[in-house]
Length: 590
Image (cartoon, rainbow, N blue to C red; front, side):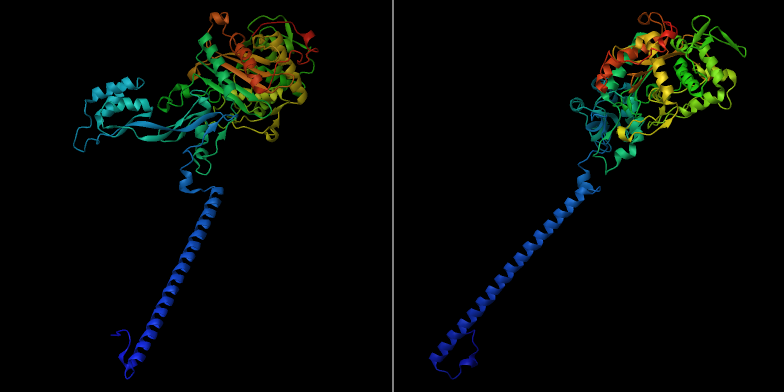
């Protein structure tokens, strides 16, 4: 009856007492049960609260960790997935020149139909013909060989979506389209020799892609674009003008440079013919040679201002009115001559205006081989050009002491071969007050530009600005003139030496160069235009010399790029040449 109560508790008791005891015990039992239930509920609630607080604190701690991690270089795999696999390269104004680009590739998977099955539904010949119709630039025989080998291989990199759809329509399961991230150059061939390209394995080749390879792949810095000194607008104008002149003169190649004379920044650097960095499979050809930094040339008369400046600095030239004999000059069984007869004598301004080899050779002779050699060394003409590009040509530099004839020929630009970039750096020192600075392809804050080294006295540089301006106003550089821009410069036409030491057998193969600066009253930029083997055409009045081909390039280019670089034409300003004007007569020699 009262199973929950021990029988001994109520033995001998009356029924009423037994009943009362039973009720009391039941109440106590249920009270205890209720208390235990209430305690259990409280404990469960407490655990819920503790758990909630724990998870809340954990969440806050994790959020704090993520916030701190976002401020540190190492952001982890999740954050790393949000940045491109290779950093972007931009010009000085932020215009993208190279960036990562998601694309498809065409992959041949011969096991797609099974290990023992045939690799293709159609014959390899049929598939190769169909692929050539979709990709006309591909070689049929090359595709056929790859399809017949039965080995997995890429058939093409960078396949557009519409091209992938056409390949898919062929119904060949073995033709697959892996999605990859590849390098893309949105400006096409623009500044190709500056940028280089990225090969199929993701390694930078040539140009800044190779020089910056480690930096561009750094996981901690891939989100930060690298800004170059190049101005894409100026670069485009340089390439356009050089390309036009190449067509006009049927030249073999061309090179052009625009250099900031105070910072050494390369604003534009062009080499033609160019190549398309988007087609790295086609880049390994002769067009990848950089004529501006890797090819060395005897540049001829553009070197004469260096000789004159060195002689002024050394006190060999003290009076611009002094005249020098201008008749053919025999030296060691060799006769130095000019392209035209300019009379019995010339002074220094006339010698530069007419580009006289004879007078410049005499001045170099008086200066002496050691002093001229030291000047050329100070201008960096005896070593590779200082710039970040991997491809830098080593000058053909006469070693040892320079004998008399060598000194005289180097004085007017023969017997020493350098790159156009060497020339640009030298002209910057010639006009900027006499300070030589290395060129750079990185954007430079003018306040932190390289201090450089003094090569010429400031007074000598001022005199050279006058003389270079006279050459454009009255001499061989007339076609480089641009109204209001006060261009100054020097022409140079040098016979091109043959290969393997064969000498100058081809009299029609020349290197035509114009080295310029503007505005000459306060120079800001050097401009170099060089043509490799221009021909005498109707467009150049049947002439191959720099006065008729490379000088006009500068004349057309400066008005295009001046406003872009903050130089506006001003017809009321110019270099004061009043002390030199009475000494010269107009002339158009080379």
